[in-house]
Length: 66
Image (tube, rainbow, N blue to C red; front, top):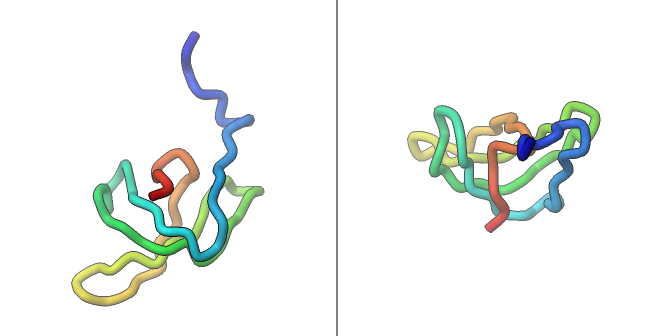
């Protein structure tokens, strides 16, 4: 099958990188990576929401590096 094995899914981002959200309520938003949590396969990204910088936790497979 062509499914992604999430156990092997890693992401090539570092703190300070700009990413675009590709899924979920913030899809299309752009933010800067603040923290990376490999054990949870998530990152904390500061998104500009309603004009305010807001930290949002995103799964690795729900964003793309710009």
